[in-house]
Image (cartoon, rainbow, N blue to C red; front, side):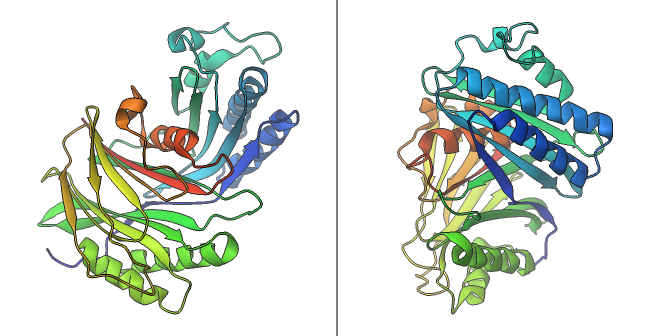
Length: 348
């Protein structure tokens, strides 16, 4: 396997989290406009994004037991967009198809309905678990063009612990060449502790990952370890996805959970005990099959690792942003705990 400094495919960015309360709609609309204009969306598309976000906020207030909105800028290779994710804790939607029809919004909402959100957004999605909660997605690309699907699509979502403005978890993906074919290399990092100091460690790990000229997971992890010496350290896992070989390899140290979900099955990939930057164990790579339609999910210990793919019927056919949001929504140890979910789904 040759050495290559692959191009960055995607990475974690700032996420603005807004909890559901009486002022949510106004705050979300204001933040949506700021984000959309920051990436130079046209005023017409800014208005569409604001409309979708306001409808999502209004629905949270009226129908959900509790919930929040996540607003963020999304970057994939050389493309940029804005996205809103609505996450709630129930009661869920009994009939998703009916909810997507126009005219089903109850009194007090904007009346555009979920179906109009689907039409207005460049990318949209919804996943609902009866009695447990719903996630809704609306994404607008700066140029209005949805990027063509690659061999695998990747996305992630971070949330800081309550009381902190920054999250000590991060992720990044870059394209590499493995055995002469294009592959994807993914890093997930959980800086020890919380807040700015943990976030600084995560930033250093991200820089080391991007600068590494290697593509073997264990060698990249060693590069990250060297860069984190003298810091408080982190839990880090590096995964190599080889679409041509239909395999995924993972090398990790610390409490990072990783699994391949495929047709209701779950195949775990182990990380070794240790602290990257301080106490690196003897590195080992673990491997699993990665057939078309499978999803690789990685997350920090801010989420329970007891969930099963069968707990999320229909989720793993959705795009990775929705997958990450619903798992974070349902599996967080506490609703205000830190967490990161990175989902990489291979095209069927």
